[in-house]
Amino acid sequence: MLTVSVENYLKAILHLQVEGEERVSTTAIAQKVASTPASTSAMLTKLGERGWLEHQPYHGVRLTKKGQRVAMDILRRHRLWECFLVDHLGFEWDQVHEIAEELEHVGSVELINRLDAFLGFPKLDPHGDVIPGANGRFRSVAARTLLTEAPRNLELVVVGVVDGGDAFLRHLGVLGIQLGTRMTVMERLSFDGSLHIKYPDEEEVQLLAPSVGQRLWVDQSSPSPEIVFPEEEDLQ
Amino acid sequence: MLTVSVENYLKAILHLQVEGEERVSTTAIAQKVASTPASTSAMLTKLGERGWLEHQPYHGVRLTKKGQRVAMDILRRHRLWECFLVDHLGFEWDQVHEIAEELEHVGSVELINRLDAFLGFPKLDPHGDVIPGANGRFRSVAARTLLTEAPRNLELVVVGVVDGGDAFLRHLGVLGIQLGTRMTVMERLSFDGSLHIKYPDEEEVQLLAPSVGQRLWVDQSSPSPEIVFPEEEDLQ
DNA sequence: ATTAAAGTTTAGGCAAGACTAAATATGAAT
DNA sequence: ATTCATATTTAGTCTTGCCTAAACTTTAAT
Ligand SMILES: [Mn+2]
Ligand SMILES: [Mn+2]
Ligand SMILES: [Mn+2]
Ligand SMILES: [Mn+2]
Image (cartoon, rainbow over all chains, first blue to last red; front, side, top):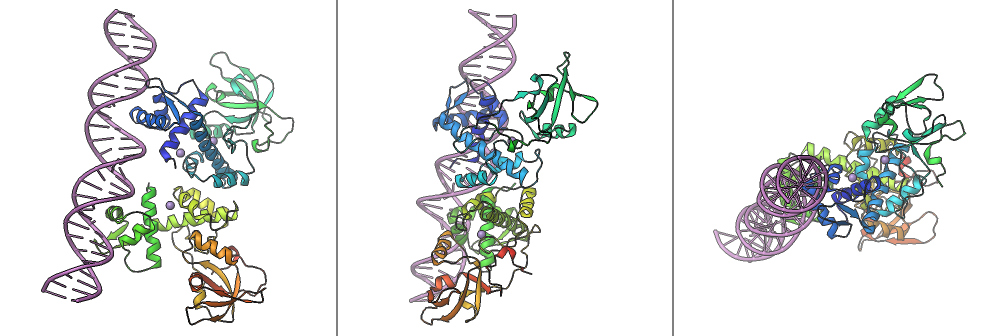
């Protein structure tokens, strides 16, 4: 069995790999797992010896196929538990990350597959992130664009958030934005990239900071008037 | 936060206290947590220093009120998760203990209270064991007798098992016995305490070993003909 | 080409929790 | 009262995972 610590490192590295560059730096990993570069360096050596990643000293790491598979499994567990917490226990989307951070380490394969079935094999977690399947691979994802880069004068729907920490999620709450919220970009201001946003049932155009617009995934709004929740979307 | 190890020790001690004698011995605890007496001795010293138990060297331990409270919480989490696994994920009662052994260490109070509500505030877990409430105390339990000591010629219903390890639970499965099974004790054989058992829809009387009869909790069968599951019983 | 800042690893420690082997206490039997 | 088997604790190590401080690479700037 993998330790909690090892699992957290592997998941952090997967995260950084997916999001970013070729090789993942020791410092970036240390930051992600809230540890020091020294501790992280020691851990990376060990993870390398055990075949979960390739470690080129002073030049960062890259997960092996084997390591990637393990990390995807942890990500799968994390996101499935988040679904359970929101859909069945009534938590808000900004309250579930920390709890899922613990639940993800319960290792029974049988448990997680049954949970998956119980939840109806969801494709997206409460933050719009894709849930890996039992085969350890992402299911194909729908086309999505950052709000900042979306076309103007077209009704869009929020389908996910980028790197959704609880603080950001609560800020969205203040703005009245959640998954399924529809909006139209009227204008992109050249000064700092702020967006003029029009909501369907409001008259006034609102100003949205680029720090928010850069972290919202949107898709073309479906023609149906009711809010479409991601669990019910066809992502093929 | 309590470590997994500390939680397992406290729960083990609670178990031994409830079941048995005044003071709990180091060896008994070591056996329960699958560790050595030496390791256990060290742990007991520490648990004593932290105020969870009183440790009289060479004479065993006793949980303090504070320690009891903590242990009851862990027991609560364990049994609520067992309910979830059986009632909602479709596990059998002999498959859930190990998984709950891990889930019980996820510490969020909010999580466990919402889970309790989601499950409908069950009073008994899938093995017929009483689930402590959010106040950390057992809810009042219905009268129950060991099958070995139950009166003859009276229809009984199985409401729980004593110390139900997975092996014993599977043996019950072979015998066709589960929670809710009804039976009548026809005779108690003086040789070894074996029981002659009559099942409602069977002609032949079956012989039941005392090792089984001593580990089944029974109650007087309710008059209604359908099987009564414990979740629906009124235990006040 | 040197130099300096930034990133990374090594060195040396510490705490938790486990183990084995050895010492010591207890309690029952002589 | 002594002896002896059993239970318990102590001593000495080990592993995992973390830390700080020091040494060392890399890389970018002079
Ligand atoms: Mn985690
Ligand atoms: Mn998520
Ligand atoms: Mn446990
Ligand atoms: Mn149980």
